[in-house]
Length: 529
Image 1 (cartoon, rainbow, N blue to C red):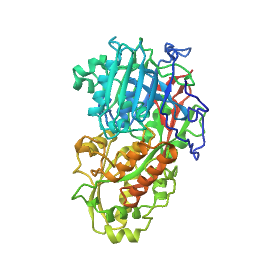
Image 2: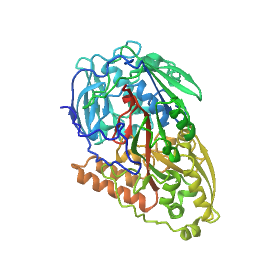
Image 3: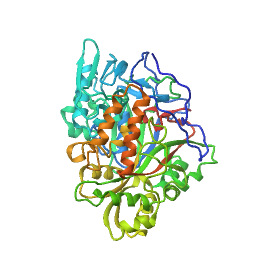
Image 4: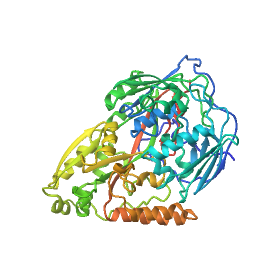
C-alpha cells in the first residue's frame, strides 16, 4: 500500500501573505510501501548549477541527531542521517530506510531495505538500526515523543530484514514519531567516537545522502553529496528537479542581511520575516512559500521556589498580554491568535481562543506589581516579540530582566539550566505534528531527569489523560481525552498561548523545497532549472 497524494500545498507556488493554509491530521497506524529508489539523477543540469545555498539562524549544537536540541541542528542533520520513514502529504508516511511496516499502538515491525549503506560502505542492517534506536531511546530528550513514558524493547532480525519496536503501554504516535530527524540512523563508526561525531568529524557515521565537508564556526556548514547514496525518501508524488552536489547552510539571524543575500544571489532558499517580505512580493525572480508553522506560547518555570510556581502569577501574565498586539509586533500582523500549544491543523487541538484568564492589565497589575523575575528569549522569535512581552509586563508593574540569545544557546540553556530563568516565549515548530509534540515541553520528566519538560513539574494528571488518549479506540475518544488535558492546563495557566506564527520561505527561481504538514524538509531541497 502506497501513500496517497491529493495536493502539494506550499511547495513553491506564490501565495498572498494573508493566507493561512490549514490541513487536517490523520494518524497513520499501519502501512506498507515498496518500489525502487528515486532522485538518483546526478546533479548538474543544463545550467551547470550544482550548489544550493540556504540559511540557519544559529550553529548546530550537535551533528549527532539524538543529542541535538536546536532546530538548526535538526535542519542540517536531516541531510546527514536517514530516518526509517518520512512525512508525506495528508499526514501519511513515505518509505525511507524502511520499505514497509505494520504498526499498532503497542508495536511496530519495519522491513529494512537491503541495499542501504553508510558513508563508509558499511551495510545498514536491522542490527545497525536497532543500535541507533536504542541510543535514541536512552539518550534523547525527545524520546518520549516516539515511545511515550517508557523504554521500548527493540529487536533486530538480520535474516528476516526486520526491526521490531514493542511497548508495554499503548502509544499511538509511535510510527509517526519515527519520522523525526532525531531518530536518524547513526552508523557504527559514529559510536566509536561519539564526541567527534557530534562535531561532524566522523564521515562513516552518516547514513543519509550527505556528509559534512566543512564547518566554519559562526559562518557556515557545508555538506557534500554521497555519490553512492540511493535510499532517498519514496514520496507518493516524486520530487521535481535534482539534489545538489553541495548544500551550504549560512549562519545568519539578521533579517535584512538574509534578504540582501537573496537579492544579490548569495542565497537560494531562506526564510524572510517582517517588513523584509515587501522586497520580494512583486519580484518574479522569487517564489514565496507560506508556512503556518510555529505555535508561540509562554512557558513557565514551575519548580518549587520559583516565581511562577504560583498559579495566580501565571494567570496574571496571560492577563498582561494583548495577543493581537503581540502578533502585530512579532509577526508584522501575519499570524493568528492561538488557542493551544499546537495549531488547529493538529488532530485534537482545541480551537476556542477565549482564555480562562482574558486580557485584563488592571487585574494583572494587582498581582504582578513589584514582582521581579528572569525572562529568557530566543532570537528565533524575531527582533520584536520578546521586547513586546517585556514591555507589556513592565506596564503592569512587573520587573522582568530580559536576556535574548541565539536559538542554539536558548535550547541549551532551557534544557540544562533550570535555575537561570523564570519565563520564556517558545516558538515551537512541532515537527511531529502531534498533540504530545506540543505538550512535551510542559509535562513528563523534567530536563534535569533527562526529559524535555522545561516547566519542571511532571503533571501526572495530564499524563494520565495522555495515556488514555494513546490507548483510545478511535479519534473521537482520543480527542476527548486531549481536550480535557488542554483545558486542564489552560485552566491553571500551565502555559499561555499567544499565536500561530507564519514562516515565509523565499526561493529563487530554479530551486525548490517541499513543505509537508506545515514543515519544510531539507531532504527535499532541489535544483529545478
